[in-house]
Amino acid sequence: MVFTDLVNENFNSLNDTDLFMSNFIIDHPEKVKKMSTQDFAKTCLSSKSTVIRFAQKLGFTGFTELRNYIKWQGKEEVLAQSSNFVAQIFNDNEKTLSYISKGDWLEVYQKIEQCQTIYILSTGVTQRSQASELQRLFLLIGKTALHIPASAQTSEFRRIVDRLSEKDMVFVLSLSGENTHLENLLNVLSVRRAIIVSITSYQNNWLAGRADYSLYASSSRSPLPNEWWLQTASSFFVLIEAFAFGYVDYLRKKQDNSTNYF
Image (tube, rainbow, N blue to C red; front, side, top):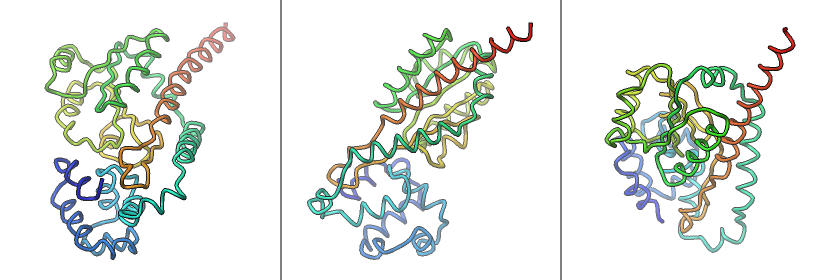
């Protein structure tokens, strides 16, 4: 998949500034290959954060990954000789484990313990599998959890809105976190005062900014343009399992402290 295909695929999520940057890349690929994020932002009369968000909308972790994609476009055979996608899987999982080891989810666990029902919304095929696993673990733990599509237009979502309250928690899973079409859905959740937890790729993103709490996993795509469909996702399952089992540890520790008190 060439860069123009990525733009077309994500066209509905791109604003005028994004399209201006897209056209600049298409018209000046050789210049872009030598630019830093700051250089590109200055040239396109934009900010560094806007450039990063633009790259993330196209599925990259940032401008550097996007620039490398442009750099190796048409040179797949050369890059393939030095590319090791399995190593990327290890690297993404190592980054995720490092994030998990430093995470403080006590407040989230307290909200889970107090909440009445957990709803899990997924935005893509892979996220549906992740949501199903999170639902399974919550059910094993003993928390009521329902998995529904992340669309304000579905009958399932419209039905739960009728009884949604501040006693409920909603987990929203998205790879990029740039699903701005979810804005109406999140607005409804906010009005109903439900607690929102996002699970996205490890980067600043729109969805995480709208959530009350955010969980992250590291994910990267293959640097080969003709392998655009290769993107790591195993780290999300590691995150979900660690988060759910961490809640079990929280309950056990709370019970131990209560027993010791008496």
